[in-house]
Amino acid sequence: MTLFAANVFSQRGFEGMLKLHENKDFFRFIKSSAQQDLSEWQSKFISSLILNLQSKNAASNELINELLQENHREMNDSLKMLLYETRMKNSVHLCNYKDASISSEFILNNYSALIDSSELADINNSLIIWKAAENLGQQIVTFSGDSKISTKRDLAGLINIPVKCSGHTEDFVFDTGANFSVVSSSYAKKLKMIMIGGSFEVGSITGKKITSRLAYAEMLEIGRIKISNALFLVMPDESLSFAGGLYVINGIIGLPVIQAMKELHLRKNEIYIPEKRNNSALTNLLIDGFIPVIEVINNNDSLAFTFDTGAKTTLLYSSYYDLNRSVIEKKYEPEEIEFGGAGGTIKLKGFVLGDLIFRVGTSVLKLDEVKLIAERIKDHDRSFVGNLGQDYMGEFSEMILNFEHMYVDFKK
Image 1 (cartoon, rainbow, N blue to C red):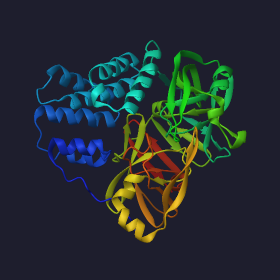
Image 2 (image 1 turned 30 degrees about the horizontal axis):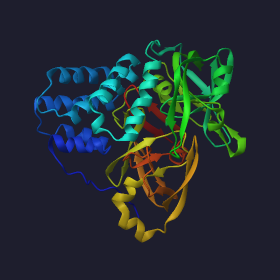
Image 3 (image 1 turned 180 degrees about the horizontal axis):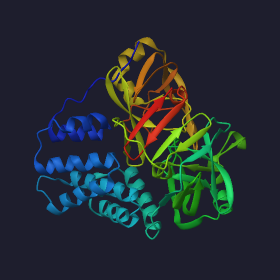
């Protein structure tokens, strides 16, 4: 039996488009944009959101600034706040932390009444990061040819790559699901990373807040690639230690560095990074803020999954459960599902599903024993249908990530 998310969003026009965006139904949001009868300013507004998702950040900010200057009477405070939030995300990707700071402050000063307390705390924490990084030079990536980087799996089965910094070569986890690159406090010192700004709190999967710092590496070397001014969250050693210290993470290379590598071919024991990128007709990869989103086709329905090379297995979230509740409860018995990461693990109500057929790019695979969490995970699932894990990726000899032309594909 194949379960699938029905197309529950039938709204048309500007409000319908915004609802699709709010519910993270991004691929349907983009595909339906050309079919809408929108005014000029509405079309410009929707285009700014689409360009942001497609990592065309400078073009998105250009439209946003035009809209803010035009100050259309029809734009209420909620719409203006969405523009400032999008501008902030664009500016971070452009390493314009000064403008990210300005946008965050404007939201706090003008739209606080529209934001709940937890989101306000997140914006305040983010503002500490952007202010700390205001004077940091732009992250610059230099290629000196194609790179073939040997990889290995650690005790948790996660991909590790060698990273050179300040004369030391250390194994760091390679994780597209990490919004930021991360380093333990002791390794930040060992690698002579430069601390900037004060402390702030980072949310974890368990809801626990972890006090962290910010630092940057003047130069990282990964294969034949050099990355200058790479930002890292510096977390306490104990927050990256698991099973009583049997498994320890020293550092994580996250999305901001991975995305800057433009195109990566993940193979069994290596990552190949070509200096010259390849185009494709596929358009199945988006970036939602700092989260990679991949299009998964299930029974001809387009589903937005997060995309995390650090996850061992595919995981379905409460939005999938909400869409398929009656079918799931009829066929499966509820179970406790353990879910964890930095900050610990938690147990939640869920199910284990079978016989799910997914298509990603040109690849197709049937997955069994897919865990579904029926409860909403605070600050985590945010309406996404699920997260694609290594149980899908591992069935193919090669996974291609292209952040220049925004596509993902798998090869046998």
